[in-house]
Image (cartoon, rainbow, N blue to C red; front, side, top):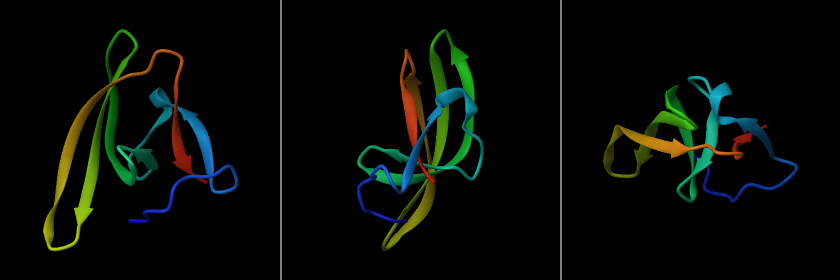
Length: 76
């Protein structure tokens, strides 16, 4: 996974509710691939991210995100 920080030319903003499997988003200081994303409450989306790290097995992390008037930064 790329570790470079997002910039205006390499990223776009997308509504959290529009994320789909395979999207790559900037989350927790790294680019992460979306495994699944779905609404889980008022202004809350649950996202499952594929986390790949050197010398560690690939794993899925689940996060609840409060999306009140925010967007996700996605790779263009």
